[in-house]
Length: 184
Image (cartoon, rainbow, N blue to C red; front, side, top):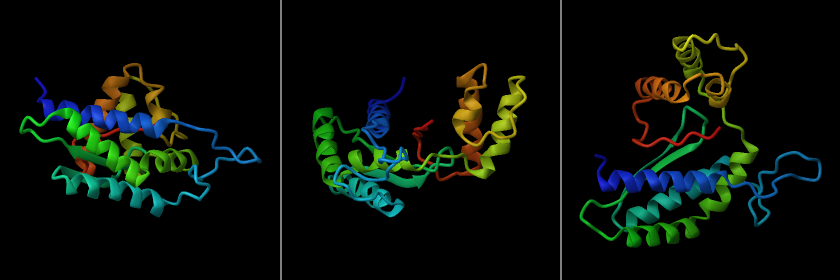
């Protein structure tokens, strides 16, 4: 049985990932991705990192344990985790605080713009592992695969592939947070 705190944290990460996957019209007149937030300013890596750090500082100020941001070796995105209290606090209080911190950090608007303009790639150290994980399933990988999606789409058992890749990533990158969201 997964403890309530871990379930809430997982739901939180999924919610943040879904918020990060939203894609308002982000094309410029030339049809190229635009790295602009709704305010019209360009979203740089520094802006993205500052927004993630702002969200974490805000939640930390409420007394929650936070992890990150850590660059994901799966897609070069910023992973973060806010661990809800295990003292029986009402989840509605946690969610309300998270909403306030998210609004103050503007992460929900900055992250989708950044992710649209910066396609994620596997860390070079994970490329041989992705090939190995596919071979374990009897699939010969294409040598031009560069993203998690390039590999997982070829896997007959995507969950098995994901587990293999997660184990490899944890061995290579021990500082990863407990929950990992992969954009592909």
